[in-house]
Image (cartoon, rainbow, N blue to C red; front, side, top):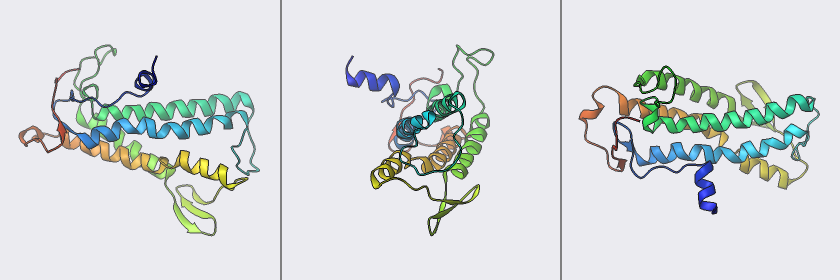
Amino acid sequence: MTIKKLLHTFHPTAPAVGDTERPVPRWIMRLAYAMPLLLLPSCLWRLPFAFHFEMGQQQDGYMPALWLSIPYVFGLSVLSELVAFLCIGLVRGWGEVAPARLPFIGGKHIRPMAAVIPALLGGLALTALFGSIPLGGGQSLTAFGIADHVTYDNGWWEALAMICTAPLPFWGPVVVVLAVAYYVRRRPGAGDQAPAPGTDQRMSADV
């Protein structure tokens, strides 16, 4: 199997033609498909902590037992990728009509606010969780109060952490943007407007 096929297996690419009822701007489509890939480095960087390997961080905090840390860290990484993958639903047909294989709701149209409200709340929560305001003196203001910056054994460990976790603060705002674009596309009367330049045309109204 080629590298290209492996990448397509674990990270589907944005389709050339959309399957939504109304066209999705290309930049919105690409943004949604980029999120799982952009968050993958932080998910992989986090995994060694499950085995009490601190990736160069200097911390005196308590580390839970392996039977707790392993499922917690691995579960958190998997959950992060699943949430990021759900962003694709805001730009695809299965985010408008539930896939037929789902019990009870399969084949039914999804009300716009049923997707918009959870996405907005989730985006705001992620923004609060990963956002911070530098205060100087090695401290930042977060949703949980004033926090000290993490120190590392050397600059290489710090650079690796910064590169891998750099997309996290943008996760929440991106979800909010995708939710707003989803609402604008599906709001009543949106179909009466002319398609904006740089949009993917509809292929099918149903999944």
